[in-house]
Length: 236
Image 1 (cartoon, rainbow, N blue to C red):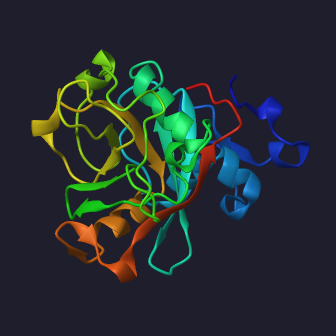
Image 2: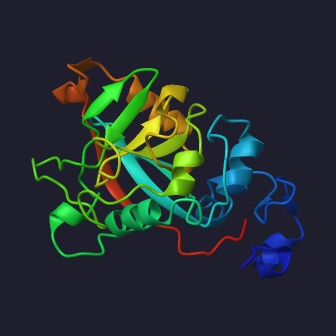
Image 3: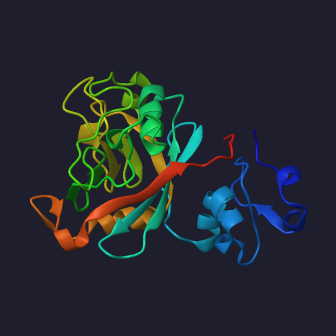
């Protein structure tokens, strides 16, 4: 379903503008990007309005949106929104959604309270396989599920690409990666299943925390405080 002017609250209709040609997302002029309504429904337009580098480059049709509130050390959590390529990478997206929404019983099937345990500045922020309490996570679609051919055709073009971590072909599980730099050597080897469309600056901040052996130091641990799916269906 498209989010058009007819669906906006009456009080907002007069001052909403389409900032992204061909994209059914609107925002109210002025300070509306600070409102809860805008944060939920207008994240792409708000980023463009604010002039922030909050988004990566979209490579495929976005079918749904997920969010993660990421905390670095003792700082307040910051929201990262991911557009999911459900048609290009259906298995990877189903796996990510299942773990984002904690759809199976047990902490091993939920990204909430998981950590980003491998960080390489300028390259990756990787998490999803270990909880803060040491619990080993499991894949919603299994611990070694098949690669999505469509996701393998997408490229590691730079900041904001979201891809599966793996141990080789057809070994996908709970691990996922935010790319913070181009990595063409990974093309065709890791399934790309989404893109950061809001909060890329927070991913970049995570990529710069001090590390030891590619793991954040204890005072700067990077944790998923909360996570979920946006309930409004967006057609793009």
